[in-house]
Length: 375
Image (cartoon, rainbow, N blue to C red; front, side, top):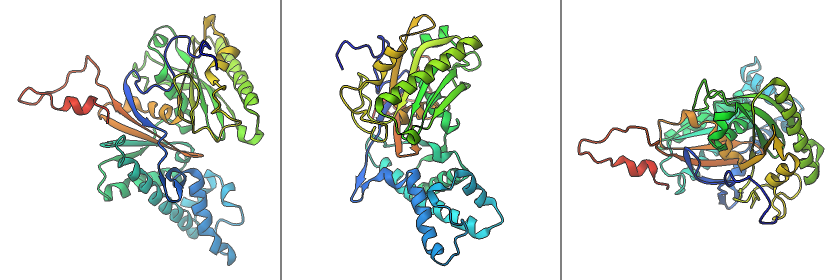
């Protein structure tokens, strides 16, 4: 990609570690052990494998309470129903899978907490598609208890926003401040290994300046894994989805900002290229000649008569940012996203200049260094 190719229209760089209210201490860490990447032990596929392993001996005897449906084809709904249904054996089977998965998630989380970047983490929010189920919520709660029993002083909680919307809403926190002064909504894109979701996000700044009331006005989902498109085909489809949303927003009378926030897997470079971690996306997104922000600006050069600007960050970071309004009472926090893979990011809140803080009796603010320094 040529150096003069526009990727942000001058409003900032992609994948930056210093955002308006937080520092991104790390993201997309790929921890390994002798068996490979640790994230593979605590992703959605790992839970399905655990469930399948528990069912195999039961299938041989014809005693599988979940029937003949393959584990990977059992949806979240049926599994949730099994937990509260009258079939006690089915409930016990699903609970057994939850317990084993929670053990794995606790181990992987513990390994994150031992890294320098994740030191002194006070709270971890868990997002991703797995969280959007009763099974996922129980697994998260059980993992929280396991971590506490091991002496970790950290809280593990489900992400507050709908996991399907958190990545979109988190893109608001990538936008420059002038967006919120002149416009009431933005376009956001959440790219995953299975789906691409686009949406119009209302800021609702008048109700809550911290964006805690932000909401998805309208969204569109494309399950690209089913279509197996080329990389170019995926970008073309994405651009069409965004254009359709722009048209709908204009008809509704929304003040749509000329800004597109993108949540995408991988290590995002400042120029908008992807260094690594995009292997589950259609085609080669890690090529030095591929630049999604630039391509979208080329496809949608203007929104509402203004030049389009685009900023892209890692999908785990974006999901975590949606939780930022609720993390103001602590200093260090992280996010894990359980989906096709295990996304991760760690944040440190920066004190606002106008925020008054209590000082110890000796007049020295010994807490200042801890709350502002990066690990």
